[in-house]
Structure formats: structure tokens, C-alpha cells
Length: 95
Image (cartoon, rainbow, N blue to C red; front, side):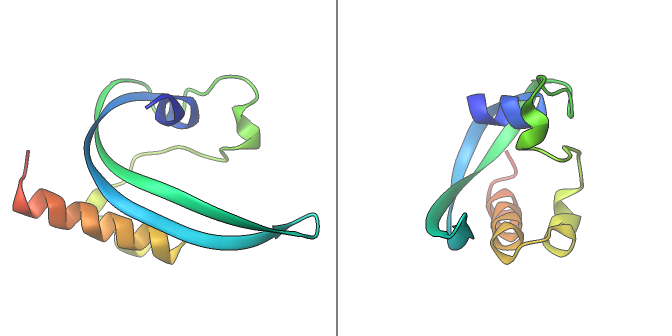
């Protein structure tokens, strides 16, 4: 949840783990293997986009979007898949 706050400005609590996305990229000639874990979380406070100085190196923009629109708006397949999974979790148990 620390990472969520640092990269979005929002305090949140975990509702459910959605899954992992694995990918490989090249950085300065080296292959990097990365695993990103996605969670469904409930916002508890803070303000979206209020980032600490220096976080612009990691975050270009933080903003809200409707979860229903996320599978078509997100840039990467893994992110779209996780948004679809979040919709499935919420359909089964709307919290």
C-alpha cells in the first residue's frame, strides 16, 4: 500500500489479489525480467495525482478512470487483463 500511495497519492486497502503479469525488457543492454503483482483495492483517502517531489521519474500521470472502461483504455495487455479480472471479482462479490 506504500507503493500505491507513493505512485498515486491515494491511501488504499487491499480487497483481493488479482494476479501477476510477467514480462521482459532491455535496459542498458541487459535483459530484465519483471513481475508486477496487481491488487483490487479500495481508496481510503488522499488525493489522486498528489505525488511527492521526484516521483515524476516513475509516474507520468495518475488519474481516475471508470473500471468498466479500463479494459479498452489501458495501454498494455496485462493491465487490461487485470482490469477485466477486477470486474469479474466485483461482479461475483460487489463488496
